[in-house]
Length: 438
Image 1: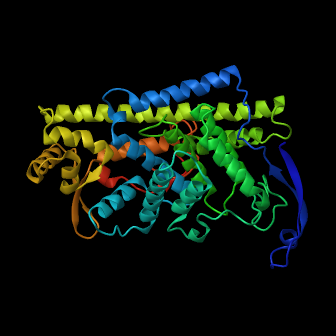
Image 2: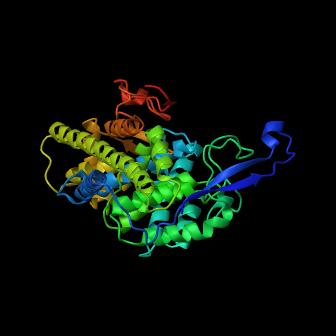
Image 3: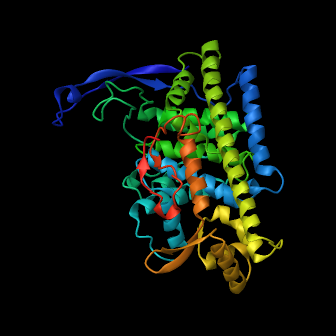
């Protein structure tokens, strides 16, 4: 039965203010276990979950379109990792990140420490998911491996793959849980709760999207790590939807919408954290309220992804008009198709993407430069590369939209740092600074 456990904080003499070093009694929340539990979803909630889940499948499997390529999947994962990094306090605009990535692809250091940290977050998320997907079941070791990968290279790397041994809390101050907004279970409860969470994630009795939503809420409620809970909780959504086969190619950036809807997100998690027996109506109501929010965030993430796809398809169509006759299967045709997934590339990178000779690829790149679709740039200390400014602008628009409650920062301001909106000038003058307002 979900309940609160009354605990005592002893306080200390650490030199902070009297209030902060004082002891107190506080309540830590102990959630019900998940595995084997019977779930009662309201009709409208079940329909919302089913509709959103079906749309994820359609987006992953429909006919020849941008969503059927790895390019869109990479950009959506990059958008989530970049914005997630900003949530964690790492800040760099998309142009910097893409240039740093291009430098690494050409075997050179990027010289941009901030962008490199975000690239590490992207690589870690992909590596963590790849590692976890090696097994058909979600085990505690796979969950710890995800966390270890996500923490690798950060200032708190020593916490990686280690379940916390001390009490943590959310909100209030850094010294005691006396004024915390929420206190997760004490450390001695974590082994059983984590094993139960893994058992639940390994099952298939519940629909995949509902399973992902409940697992995410339970993970954030348990808060099992000293640091990196947010990143791991976001990766868990990806893991479940991929493991269940719903999102074979890409997962919509659900967690970023939840982060944008911060008040609604917290309210949903609070409702999920009922007190009482799991078969009681209050428990079912709390789970249904949370899943309503999770399903809505999924639909919003899909809408933003579809809008982005539409912008890219319109853009590549216009490119083909500007280029004139483009023979199907030619190096130029293949490169135009590949560009959305690689807005900054070298001729060698383009050759790898198209599978054509260096000479044919070089000629294709030259035609795109002549048409002002690609612009020559310098990457790292000495490497020459090319970028597609309009693609980067589209990426910026996607990231800004994901940070706005209404999907448009001109209507509602972004809820976290985002790149400045393109102002119509040449992209070479586009600022990569971040902003909180419109």
